[in-house]
Image (cartoon, rainbow, N blue to C red; front, top):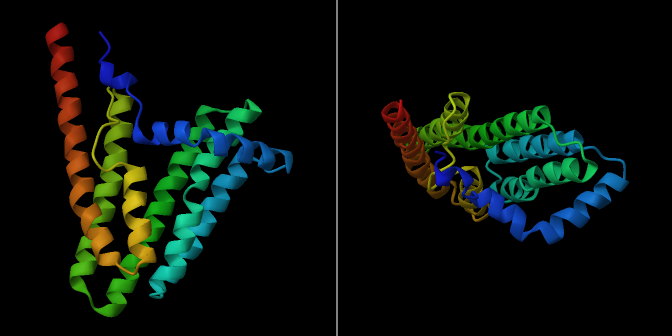
Length: 206
């Protein structure tokens, strides 16, 4: 029997539903301009890379605004692909990989800033935040490869963005990475225990 949690929409799913009235017309407009979904994916990644550079130089306002502007493009590439009827597993794979690169570039910029400032607490917290963020995504991917579901957790990618982007804009990077360092790793543990529960149920059913 399928776990009903598997059919429960994630926060990302809900955001796409709530903002469909904006995303669909904008995605259609970009399609008519001749832009392709993968172009938007790469544009978002490039914009976040530029933002990461500004963050590394201590310019949190410009870097944070670029992150705030570029990260939502992630929703547009999927919308554009759907409107074109070109949604594919490979496109979703590229999108997911670019998301990981973008997040690590941003945290890498913050990490470099803390290194330059000699802020060892910031360095450690940023490293732990990056590790937790990667583990959250890895746990989900690995679970799904084994036939389990692991979309749960209190701080998935969208929530991490909603925490970090405002913290950067308001020049409070230490607070942002501290929250992510704690709650991303809690989320990773939540997913481990969630998969363990499913594995136990599967074993009992055999």
